[in-house]
Image 1 (tube, rainbow, N blue to C red):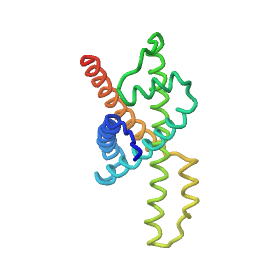
Image 2 (cartoon, rainbow, N blue to C red):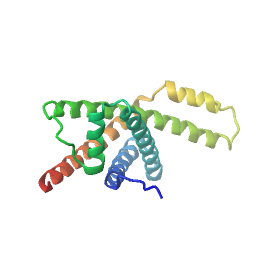
Image 3 (spheres, rainbow, N blue to C red):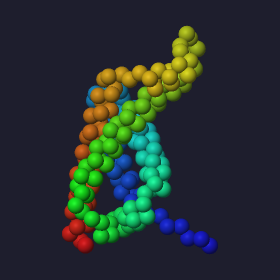
Image 4 (cartoon, rainbow, N blue to C red):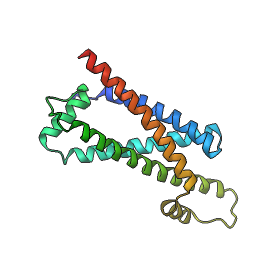
Length: 181
């Protein structure tokens, strides 16, 4: 029987980070968008799951473009939580650059995910009252092309809060790993 290897520490860490992000973003959406608590939690769950799926897909796709040395480093980090004798002269710059790219990519995907989600939800509500409402394709096109400035600011703030909290948690985890080993 073939055995599968799952990086359980990374999966559990992802769940913890998702819970923190969902909680913080739901609070920001509830206070700034004026929606109910339940709706804000549902929106936060949806956009964070969309971001997680897209993030992991991009990670898996980029994995094939890496050199064999970097693949080994990435696998070592995912499975064991540390890298193998990686040169540290530019490590801070690399991590900061990747962090900035991830922050803005998460913001854009979460913003468009929220707008598409609202377009779909408006579609299901409009099907009950079949008035002179725009069709689903029109609403989806509008959600892709246009952006509400207030909603963009709320998603940006929510993403900033959750990324800041995640950064603090990752720093504390790094300190714990550094002290232990």
